[in-house]
Amino acid sequence: MPLRFYNTLSQQVEDFAPARDNTVRMYTCGPTVYSFAHIGNFRTFTFVDILRKCLRANGFKLDHVMNITDVDDKIIRNAAAEHKDLKEYTAIYTQAFLEDCAALRLERPEHLVPATEHIDEMAAAIARLTASNHTYQSDGSVYFRIATFPGYGKLSHNDFSGNIAGARVDVDEYEKADARDFALWKAPKEGEKYWDTAIGPGRPGWHIECSVMAIEYLGETLDIHAGGIDLVFPHHENEIAQSESLTGKPFSRFWMHAEFLMVEGQKMSKSLGNYFTLRDILGRGYAPEAVRYLLASVPYRKALNFTFDGLQSAKTAIERLRNFKLRLETGAFADGLDQSLADRTAAAQAQFSDAMDDDLNTAEALAAIFEYVRDVNTAMDAGEMRSANRGPALACLARFDKVFDVLQPTAESGEMADSEVESMIAARHDAKQARNFALADQVRAQLLEQGIILEDTKSGTRWKRKSS
Ligand code: AMP
Ligand code: ZN
Image 1 (cartoon, helix red, strand yellow):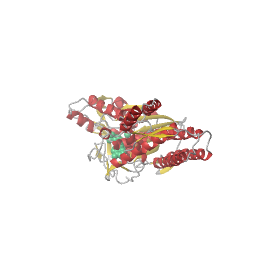
Image 2 (cartoon, rainbow, N blue to C red):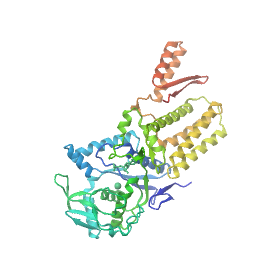
Image 3 (cartoon, rainbow, N blue to C red):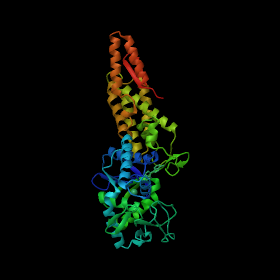
Image 4 (tube, rainbow, N blue to C red):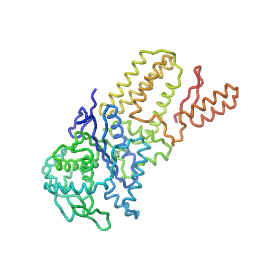
């Protein structure tokens, strides 16, 4: 089945392939580094990571740009409140963001670019928009005149005809019904950081940042542009207006948007105060891979309600998969191949890939894996598993983990690594051989303290992690 994605622009699910040379040119809007990102933000960034891994699993190469918004109203306000220089302030939260991404196993985009490194290019783009009559000035600020772009509204599917009144707005985020001329360049304000450029002193608006960096690194037409659903309007609508006015070409072929992480029916957000940072969650003793699993488990176009019960279930699901993997690795199976199990494995792998290729249907992909785990566990209980079935079963699990990336425990989570458990079991075995049963019991008790349960069988000692 072909890879296909829902495209916000066409409002259709469409077959996807990159336009040129097997490389997907992708731009995703990055964080505004004014404080720690919350796990709502990370729902969107986890979706992007799953998207990357799915594209790679389909044999495509990636050229992916993500911006770091390191100048905006909130940053300027917060930095001033802490008496910090803008750069010093944003460095702290950029670093924190990168650490959180690493903990959640989010791959680094090929280009991770702070906006403030491209101020001159932004000024040059604004000059070009001015030369082609798309802008006007007021009090040293430059605004994009949306009446000059007939396609305005095509991404958010808002019909703005009759509503494009020439009113303007200085803030970067505003209400969906408002078609407003937006700031491309903001005049310096007393005590605020500004840059001296060819179009005068000031700082860029948020929207121009993404248009300029996307075109600079990836060319005039992207394959995919993605972000959270709240970016459709005005941010992405404004990016299209600027970019297409600059180039005369479609800005992006596909637009993909992740729905919100919710808390009791409301969007998780800083302003509502109903948020958890990743650090909050890890501080409560959850492993980052449980957060990753939870955020990835609901398909990105469905809102996901955050609860600690949900996080607990994610943890249990991961334990189940790890125990299954261990059982496959350590079980003693009779020689040969069981054909029906081999067929079952191939079917599970195909179901998993088909579900992921179907607009990243992670829920169905997980269901395919868990049904498979249940069936193979049953087969192992019944002694039907054969040694030649082991490799393909592990490969199926590896295929799953290439995308979900949750099977390897995070070292800092305090959990014992598989290899440590194995070597303690070997030590216990040696103790028993030497008839030192006290020592053997001691090792068993130590493992139990670490949440590891041993089961002695005819074919050796099996172990699993206790799910709590
Ligand atoms: P920001 O740092 O505010 O620019 O946001 C970074 C990303 O997080 C953007 O793509 C937002 O759309 C996304 N985002 C913000 N809140 C949520 C949420 N509750 N659920 C999912 N994504 C979100
Ligand atoms: Zn953007």
